[in-house]
Length: 207
Length: 207
Figure (cartoon, rainbow over the protein chains, first blue to last red):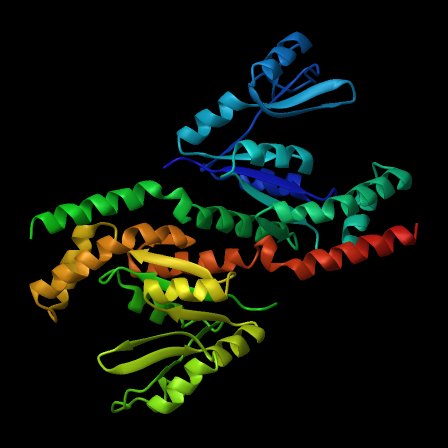
C-alpha cells in the first residue's frame, strides 16, 4: 500500500518540532528533506539535513516543477523536492512534511490525498508563555507571532485534524493513531475493494 | 463536546455483530436502541433491547419524522428513534448504529457528520466459509448473501472507513482508534477554534 503524505503545521510555540522529532522514531515514517541554497552549518550533512544546491539549480528545479512547494527566507531558498517524496510514498512509507500553513495549502492542491494536521497548545495564553520561556525572542517579535497565529486561525478549516498538544507523549501517541486510522480510509483502499469484488465474482461463478 | 454518530455496516459473515458487542464494553459508547412492532421474546426488555410499540404508534413516528431510518422485515417494522440518538450525542456519548447499507446511506443524508465504517473479512472466500460454518443457512441462502455483498461493493465508496476484520481483538482496537481520531477532526472542533481565536484577540488587546 502506498504511504500517506502527512503535512504538519501549527502555531509558533505549539511544540510541533518536538512532536515530529518523536514521531519519526517510528520506522513507518520518512521525513521529507528540503533543498536549500543556504550553506551547510557545522554538523549538517548533504541528503540528511538538507540537499545543498546553488541558486541556479534551485531555479531550475522550480522551472521543471520538481518542488512541491518552496519559499525564500532571509535571502535563501527552501523547498520540498518532489522526487524524494514520491519515492518514499511508493515504498509505502508515510512522509512527514513539517511546513507553514501557506506551503501546506500549496501542497494540498497538488496532493489532494495528503493528510493535514494542525497542532495547537491548549490555550493561546500557553502559546504566549511558551514563546516567552524560549527566551530567544523579543516581546515585539512574540507579539508579531501571536498576530500571525490569529490571521491563520480561519485557514485551519482547510486542515483535516486539529490536535491539542497537552503533553508530548500523549500527543505523539494521538498523532500516530490518527495516521494509522487514516490508512483505513475507503479512499485509500481502492485496491482492497477491487480485489474483494473480483473474489465475489469468482466465487459466484463457481456456484 | 458532542458525541459522534457511528454507523457500522458490513458484509454478512464479516463479524460486525461481535465487533460491536465488544466495542460497547467501553463506556464512551451508547448503542442505539431500535423501535419495533415485533413482540418481545423471552428475556427481552423494553428500553434495553427494543422499544416495543404497535403499528399505529410506529406509523405515527414515521409521520412525525421521529425515526432516523426504518425498514420492514418479515411483517414487522424496525426503526431508529431520533430522540434517543440526539440525547445521547448531546451528552457527549458516541452512538453506535449497526445497520444495513441502505439505512446507513439514509442516515448519512440527515446526519452528514455521521461516521460510516464498513467491516469486511480479509477475503470473499473467508466470508463464504464463515457463513457455511455458522451452519444455520442453506447453501442457496448463502449464495444469495454473497450476491447481495457483490451488489453492495460499489456503495462502500460512501463510507468513510473500511476495516478488515482479521482478528476480533485487533479489529475492536482499530475501530476504537478510528473513533478516537475522528474526535480530533477540524470539522468536529469548531468550538476549540472559536475559543482560541477569542483568546488571541484578548491577548493582543493587552499588548
